[in-house]
Image (cartoon, rainbow, N blue to C red):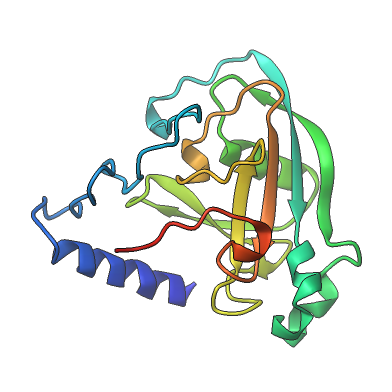
Length: 195
């Protein structure tokens, strides 16, 4: 968690020195919105602002899974104290159909499902990205399997370039949380290069 905080502080300092902007928010890179989200690829859903979404009582379903299979492929990187936490098949939650309500985000469904399944999950709100950042699931945290490790999510085989609180779910979506040991390269994840 401290490495992430230091990293975010460094990014803020770098961005603050690269242009003009208000004291409360860094300037956005070319083409990015105020939360540093680059333009979304054509045909993919645009991010929403969590505080501006109305959640209704209309129920839908999606499929949710949580995988740490990548750790099984890189056991030498895993902190020794965490080895017993990795299931033999790499699944913390196999694909499961869950209910969500119109307007809810990927984060909302993860939080509720982890509570229902009694599966540990820890997050931190990151105002710079206007989203929750998932620090750990099943007591497996960022940096537990190397300096480039942590949790990423994909919806319908796409790794969004914005936070999970900003992704509004649709009926039938397939959401996969995957642990990466190499900044997404080991799970075919989206990698945004910092300039």
